[in-house]
Length: 316
Image 1 (cartoon, rainbow, N blue to C red):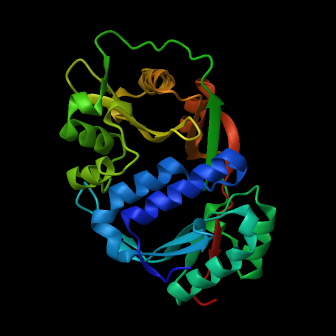
Image 2 (image 1 turned 135 degrees about the vertical axis):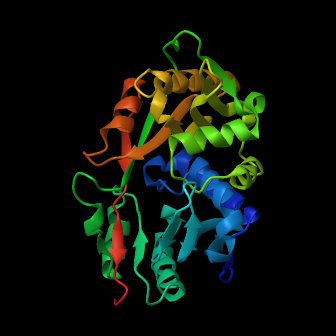
């Protein structure tokens, strides 16, 4: 077991290795923020700005990583519209191998000790009943802000890549990759789809530097006027031959034209050519967020797992 330190790129690769092992044997227990692609995306886009606010602890058995905790402490993020987002609580990303489930109590104790006096939140998998019991025993309860139609919890969706519908774009639109379009176009596509956002060229360079990133699997749709109207990054786990879309977005001025749907189908075709046999994507799962969920269902994805958002008050 190592001590609590700042998170590094080498740590993230170890954490991705645990995600790959669990994907092979217990895919229903892979937390939505602990998947192979999500780890790469979150580390890559954020470490330049927030690395000093990220703490981690790793647990090993016979040389293999079997549990980890990534505590994200209060921070300030400047967004693309000039506003500043203040994050005042602490959040824990984590994963524990089911063969070492008893370590979850140590992970929770470490998080509580790392973020004392702060509101603490976590998103364990809703299908992991034993883990939910342990969180409850440590004073964590359902997050009331996550309940209702506008809740922010996510669901994980999956499909195989045996039969992929042929993508169709409106006249004048074409598919591109980030390798072809370049960094500025790829970043602008994300900013347009997710405004306001803290994404930047620096953040994208961090994403590109991750071991898992492939520019040929970062797909975009270019409009007739040259605007990158839709974009998505695919993260290819070659061990399990599965590809994860994260993130996916479309420019507000180009929505309801079928671009996102065509891009997903095109991306899955590229992934299949690269050797993938399975695809996943996450989306907001609450009833008040039907758009992305409907998009993914329309191209053959179905719900697989989902979050159980928990919180512990600052005074607990």
